Length: 144
Image (tube, rainbow, N blue to C red; front, side):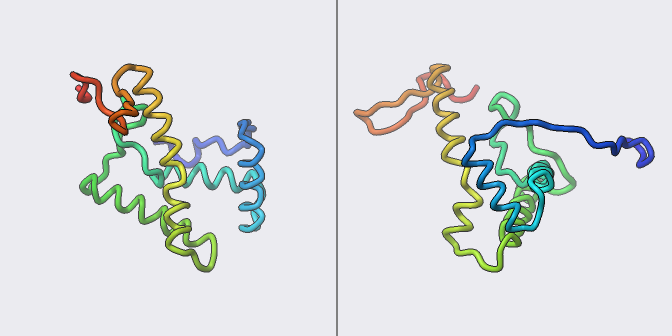
């Protein structure tokens, strides 16, 4: 790691493209927190980098990075990350209902599952059967 004096603190531009509805949602949220949009996005990215994300289930082969190793056991590290994420969501307003918390903490799970199943079907590792009412691992593929 570099010394404090070696860190380049000059500002630079980062550009990203998101759907209009998402930008509008981020703007509303930033306004609610009395933040600029830049400050909001920067804060959320940094929060995500502190392992607030529910990712990853697997290693690089699953499209995610391996879990960060810490001094404690991996389950404890994941619990602490989820705890921090929960506290972050709770701090965004005075009160949150159970349903709102569940929605906020799992919002991307359905999208991630859909993308993963599509990729696994494309790779012929998983198949969907309407007759059997669900997905199944293609014979011989058990993640080896």
